[in-house]
Length: 431
Image (cartoon, rainbow, N blue to C red):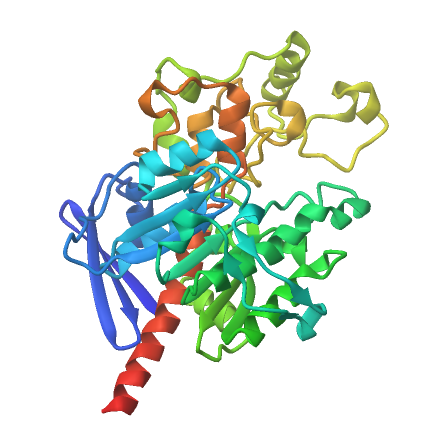
């Protein structure tokens, strides 16, 4: 798998080679002139440029579980687009009905279910870890999903709170971790050719050993499996964000390092924050998306202190009393660096006390639109469809909890490359 970019005139062309086939797409060039061709391509995408959709292409049939607002789904759309295909979201599922609505509005979906994934599939697991098997074939118990037929790709991002380093050790025993195994059962029950799961890197340290159990279940169900931790800043993003990906392909033996090796072929240097949001400096628009929240006088004073003293980390004596004797969370109340990638965007980006979220050049925290850009959402992605009533906490959740699309793009493109190679080998053997 390889990709290359060429900037000519007012267009930027991307060529993606999967196995022996080269696919070409192009976007309008709206990027800064000094950028490399690849950085200009992705900046143009971020600013709203779209590749032309091929209506006659064979659709990629996808089911997206724990879908949120659609970050992982968008990454799959971008990967399919790169190889001349379009995505048909046969079904999307999440307990957050409004997030499902946003996903459907932006990416489309034939079935959209605001329900628990656990209510969709019946299964039983025998043993744990690598010895895990299903006691019987997992079965879809939801009528709408039964009618979908075979699925090309099943993607899921089960809740990760139980695995996150932001929580204490006992939280790794959170029963929600079992939803990771539930996602595997649903993917297998759907007969999906490809299964793609993402989570925080510490999912591998789960008390209940869910990753090893998932691998055991998938292998015993006829899937080849590969896993890797993918880093957005090693794939050309303007944010340091790492996620654990598990890729399973039905009927194919995967090198355990396949996903890691494949992603390295798409390596691109990290971009600075200015690359993602530099053109928004003078944006003056009303509404929650383009305005930063009102802050308390004490937090405004902390931001003024950073700028007045040309600092990026707030001194201990300017912090709350609980921090004044020192803290390991030095990024809290911090100012973003204009010429470096952003740290991980979380749901707390609207509060200086939640991380390094003070704008580099403006005396305020970043706006939701700036956060969504840093998170990899292009300008055409609408978080307020149909005049949807919005609250800042909702925007923060939909943006901060999302999977950076460049991570989904890389993992999904790797999956498509593996399947295309299998198809070629099968055709060659048949001949």
